[in-house]
Length: 455
Image 1 (tube, rainbow, N blue to C red):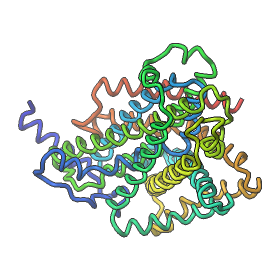
Image 2: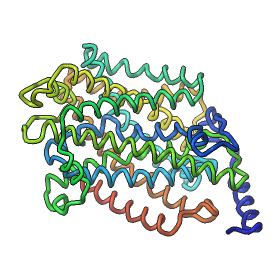
Image 3: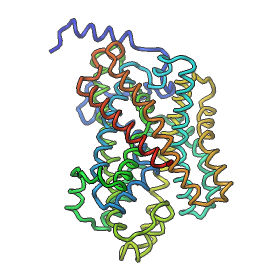
Image 4: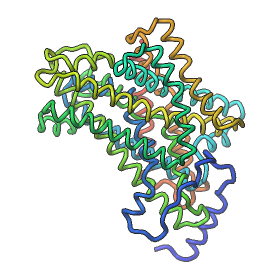
């Protein structure tokens, strides 16, 4: 047990690391939490930020890869989905702890510890990652609007530019309302795919066996490539920045050891619960691909292909129906919109953290959105709304994310392993070494994914 002197040293450390410049200042510390409530009531008060983080791990960019993995290799790659989710839990826990202990976010800390030129370069790389993340969300939402309402794709993409106004309105209602809306959208996605998987009647033993690691994943080149795609599309760099910021939305006393410890405990619990739901959704996507499309030799490279296949009895059998296709489109829209909210928030904190941009909040969010939507819109106009051409941007977006990932992971590991910065909340040795091993493996896998994709 810790003595009184140890507690005093920890409290002194927390006082010294507390900073005045807050991350996402308008929502920082804006939500009250109970002091002496039971575990589940307290956990409920902390529930919310994890949902915003989890949507990044099941955004439209993951869908084609997961469903395609099931269609090509049945249930074998479920073990990759499981491993990716465990890695995400570890990294997001580190990110949350960094923000809560220091009172700053990953972008602010990275900028403070680099030169002006270095900070600018890192900002550009990170901004490209935000744009790459938004590309998948914009394309997914635009295609969903086309499938649901018949809008031309260019019109659907343009409409997504205005969803930033919805976010601005929601911010007026309070950050807890945003968390509730995102959680509802996540629930819609979960329900749709649980229902469709239930109808597809997958092989239960095959599903369970899919979570057992197989050596052939490393020896089978096409299977390894698909596995790299799943891993590369799962761990999102913008989520590491966002997690270090929105972990500070609950009120806590950064000068008090027990308050910081409690906040870390419940924030990580919320994160792990929500990332477990993301793991279930990604598993359902792969299981759906395996149960409905394995052995059919269908072309499932695009969202429109998947939409059409679900109503084609020659491909999915007797369960085929327009309703399944519409549910798929509704889930796609929910995924795109929920991911848009988190992407916009991440874009704002990265601008503020790296370049200390001083401008009205509405202008920051609009600028962040325009950075992302203009390339997609220009591409859509040039190719006259061709879904296949526009969806090819998804491949390049994953390449950008793969390039940007080390620039978020390495600082995160360095900072959370720094005793002077983190004090008593520094990474334990096993966390430190495991995270470095994961970082090296992910960097190697992503470099291989980039090489294979480009060459």
